[in-house]
Length: 174
Ligand SMILES: [Zn+2]
Image (cartoon, rainbow, N blue to C red; front, side, top):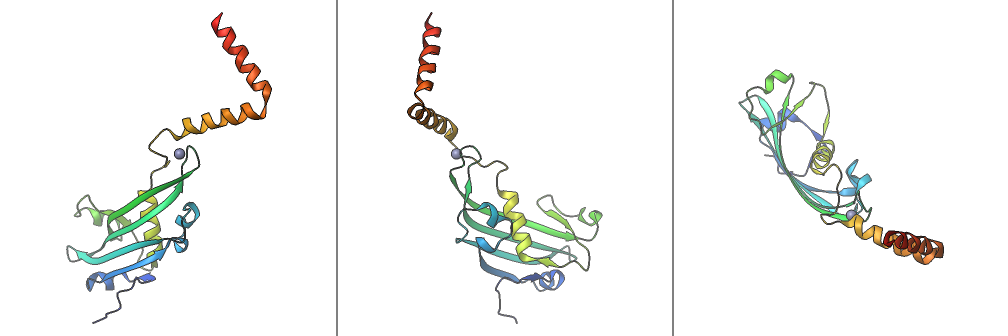
């Protein structure tokens, strides 16, 4: 019996699945490729739980959960945007796409070559990326607030802007 259930660096797919290995561990966000480039809180931790098993006695699968609080840049106002992620995923690894036909639709299908080396960190990184919204932004109209702040700044910096605004306002009345 192997009692070392720390997350493995390299995934031995068939070995782990056949033995129904269960791994739990943590990654610092700074060590997760691609995620470290977009997160502001790279010193924080992602918790990872991975269970390996064989589906239909032949297809190696991973059922995983990733828990992390990530702080991204809001794509509208560029201010910090905290997001709570709980990523639940099921992966099935096949050699050919037709092998996936017997699997239910909750599986994401990975087509792998026999000699392909799978790194745990790559899979974790993929799953986190997939769960992040395409253009993350605050759920309130942060852009509106930003524009109002900008106008106030412009007014105080440039007196002519104020004159222009007054002129426009007068024209509007006539
Ligand atoms: Zn925003």
